[in-house]
Image (cartoon, rainbow, N blue to C red):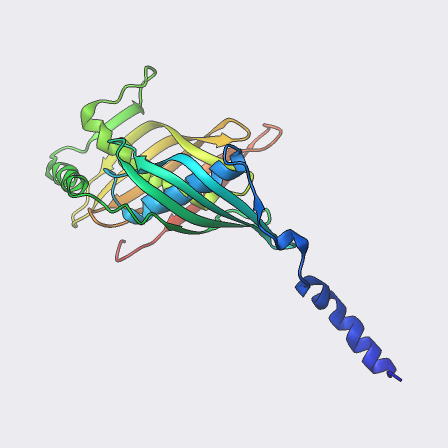
Length: 263
């Protein structure tokens, strides 16, 4: 016969047994590839990939999601596995298939991402373009400035195109850092940009820009300080002001990515 202490011990362990027990929800579920739940993790994976690549002249974008599955972990979160094709944003060059896993913790931002685009590496032309842009910025005698990029007609001045692409690279970190399972962002427009002179081997810019947030369809104002050199992921400090649901105020969010020996 079991003693009272033994019964109490089993009761204490019961919650852990329930949580550890296998669940049918942990079986992968296929998701239609045209659904937002399939598109969202694929786009996030490429934001992460672009940021890690460190090249503003070879930004990848999703062209077609081929496969998407979801695995639920009760009381923890959801893990998505996606396979998708991608091309280079600037040249439309096809880079083949990518695969990624994206794990969202329940109601938490900044998912855990693993991505592989085996057919993609930074091309020599992109490396040359990165270095040319970097050299031009270091050689300037007056800091570069700009506003409303693109303008109301969707146009970007040629000299500001790399500045726009560097903003996309830097905002990729912000988008991943702020994203949740139900909320995602796209960079919409640079309101103002100003080059910040530096005495070291790095270049820096202060951006005021808008991120377009889904599903609210709000334009979220953010300030980004981006420090970069060719061949490195940028260092990004940011502050964004997301509007509250009732529109009566805003909530500030800040973040920073410190990589390498950036200061």
